[in-house]
Amino acid sequence: MAELDWHAERSDLSGLAQLDRSPDTDGIDLVAVRTYRQGRVRAEMARRGIAAVILSDPVNIRYATGTRNMQVFSMRNAPSRYLLMTQDRSILFEFTGCLHLGQGFETVDEVRASKTASFVAAGPHIAERERAWAAEMADLIHTLVGKGATIGLERLNAGVALALAEQGLRIVDAQEPVEMARAIKSAEEMKCVIASLRATEIGVGKLRDAIRPGLTEVELWSVLHQSIIAQNGDYVETRLLSAGARTNPWFQETTDSVIGENELIALDTDVVGCHGYYADFSRTFHSGPGKPSDKQRELYRVAHEQVHYNMGILRPGMTFRDYADEAWNIPDRYYANRYYLSAHGCGMTGEYPYLYHHGDFPDAGYDGVIEPGMTICVESYIGEDGGKEGVKLEQQVLVTDTGIELLSQFPFEEELLR
Image 1 (tube, rainbow, N blue to C red):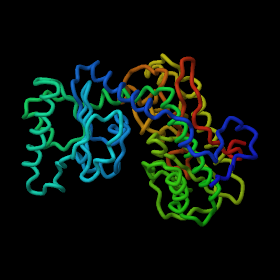
Image 2: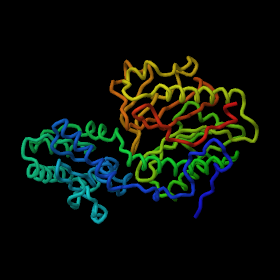
Image 3: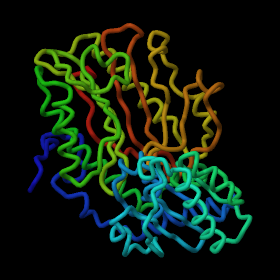
Image 4: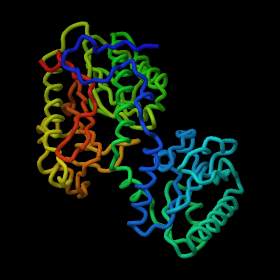
């Protein structure tokens, strides 16, 4: 069924993809995407002397293999499915009854049934289950890479980690190699990112068209969900749509609060969309039926300035510290309510790196280099401490060899920029 092209009358969006095209028909070589990603993880493991990793974060399993199964469920039930990967072997331990979901992938050499080592699964026998789980994994690791090897571990309950250590394994955190792998996207991978963004833009367009005073926040927010799921996206990671006084301060989760007349409505998409890729941009709308107030337009223009200024300084080879030093100076009246980051990496979720504001860098910041192939989300929240409303804006960009390429193409609100 064709989608309504709500951009049709706009003259400033000629480069936007056709909105009635399914994101799954974009000619993406998913085999190339999967093999590139798995190669990235293995390269980062080798760089750190890590012989094997046990991944239990479902997003990281999907990154390393392309397999997907009950992502939200397995996030809170670890280890219920997990991946053991070495330089030449990839064994997926899939949830009970789900082995077929991991079969047929060139990135998975073998699928085995998992043994869930959680209290919910084992009850009072949890310690015994954890020791048995660790002994089995240690035997397999010793067979694949020998004894005394360094093993990367993530997101396992404490008892499992302790039991693995008791098996004589040298354990390190797997977060660093996986995050560093995920940070650099291939050209084929970027097709997945763009497909997710285009689908999310359709959903946000439908949400925007549905705005009217009298709706609750959750009713309006559900419009985005329906569109994302209908386009084979996965889920929305946060609950960040709020209206009126609930836009200040930011991070007030969506509720059944009723949207009033002539209020600002702020949205952060945070969509895990097509092919598992994050579509992360923010927009703020006006509920009508009247025109935005001078104060609302001021907030919007300031947020718009911050995003575009910071996009303008991003460049390959720039250090994180240099970015913090050169970034837009937040006016004092908005500083207390600033967004906690100036920008952040983006891939299958929000990811490395975090780029901090100048004032936060001494305490929270760390250095690194902005590299071609990184996708970065540039953030702004503008709202006075104690003010009535606030504006959230954000753009997603790709760092190229020469600068940046804008990825999120959903339009800004002209009536709020006047």
